[in-house]
Amino acid sequence: MTPTRGRPTEAGEVLTAAHEPLLALERVTCAYGSSRVLTDVDLAVMPGQFTGIVGPSGSGKSTALRALLGVVRPVSGTVQRRAGLRVGYVPQVETVNWNFPVTVGDCVLMARTTGRRLPWRSPAERRDVADVLDRLGIADLADRHIRQLSGGQQQRVFVARALLGHPDVLLMDEPTSGVDVSTRHEILHLLEELHRDGLAIVLTTHDLNGMAAHLPHLVCLNNTVIGTGRPIDVLTVDVLERTYGARMEVLTHAGMPVVLDHAHTHDATVVPLRQAGA
Amino acid sequence: MNVLFQPYEFEFFRNGVIVATIAGALCGLIGVFVVLKGMSYIGHGLSHAIFGGYAASALIGVNFILGAGAWGVASALMIGGVTRRRLIGADAAIGVITTASFALGLALFAVFGRRGRSFDAALFGSILGVGLEDVVAISVVAVVVGAIVFFGYRTFLFTTFDPDVAEASGIRIARVEALLMVMLAASILATMQVLGVTLIAATLVIPPTVARMLTNSFSRMLWFSTAIGGVTGFVGMNLSYHLDVQSGPTIVLVGATLFAMTFVVTGAHGRRRAHGFDDHASRPSVVGVGR
Image (cartoon, chains in turn brown, green):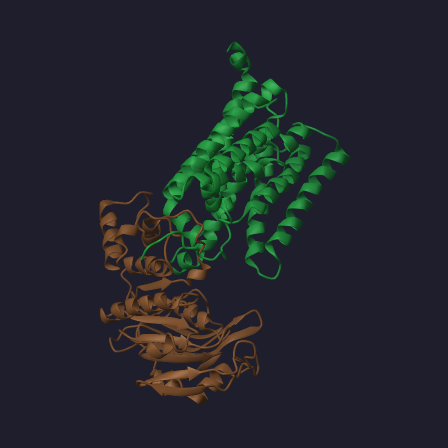
């Protein structure tokens, strides 16, 4: 990557040119204590791109997402962010405290935390919340407690909250983790719709067939980037073996790769490829 | 009827009732954050830690609000700092810092004798010796904390519910949490005279827990918990006079009774609301929803 114009900021260097990425990790290394989670990762998020980051548990998927978000600071390398970029973040639903006393409307309004000091909603905010809930087809759930929702509705609430901040890019951590098949389809369709409307999306997933194979662009990650490209190009025996540390078979069905994992070994026996010097 | 008003002839009792009511309301308000953030143990530990500062300031002859206050804020920030490191478990860190401080307080009193305010009052609460300055102190703390919570409502809601995303949205989590700890320390300090350091934790935990059983809304929970805390303090203080039991235990027992009643009356519905509501890892459960 060539050096970009603009002054350096706290978040990294400012990106200015229109053809350049919205967000990018450049030779980023992240560590928790002495264990290195990401090593020399290059990852660019282009305008309008829909990217899935795939890899086994502990491969650094969430860390890469959090580095893009700016919550995790790399020990080396830079995180570049286009000036004035608005990022929407949708957390993994399993990490949400569903017993917390908030209604759907309250939760969505959290996107407007800074800017207004008074606790209650302004008429404009009321309208904006109603609009975004309507856009996501959950307008009638505004006064419901967040626990009284189906899996797909729960995901929509947090997407609605992210959209209320008018983001240029949406970052999602494992949006289909722990959901049933119909909810997974629901979420995938919702994201395809948002992507069609011009939103750039980056999500992490460990679901190769249910999620990754349906996305336009993938990044295979295991501590470092193993492969980048269309699913048909990166969901290959070689890349998967290097990503998951296990041999899998890949078939093609209706032009889409289907990954077969007979041995079910990849969960427990991941061997990080790059531990040298860590 | 006259019997009920009889204690109001005494100035110390009038002061005591005002302090207990405001203290209850204040602890109820701040307790919402304590309970929702799963910090009950911090509240418990912090009140014990402040006892060390109380004993030290009584011995040196420093104003106890200044002495114990500085000590309390220091302990609060220290606990906050230690809990952000992952190496030492938060509960262990709190156990060490606060129990040591409490023990130091006990040791200081044992070696140098009891001076100034009553030793028992600090431990279990007493309305004897509640003066105008206590009324003023707790009123000031209540107004300041109330204003901070009012104007910071959105920030506190976001950071309590979803600290990660709040931080990613540009909110300075560490600052918000430090502010919360300082407010907690100030509330404990202003309250310890009537409630006693060993019992304050209950007034931080009971009102929000009762409030949570009654509502699913964060703003209503704040109002309910404040009101429940205030009423509990008021009723408890009056009962304390008539039953001739220390104010701290009476107020806590009134709160516990209210909790038991709410628990029974709201039935399974309320219990489900309150169950594990500070458990961030709890899985979503779907309650009767059509698609």
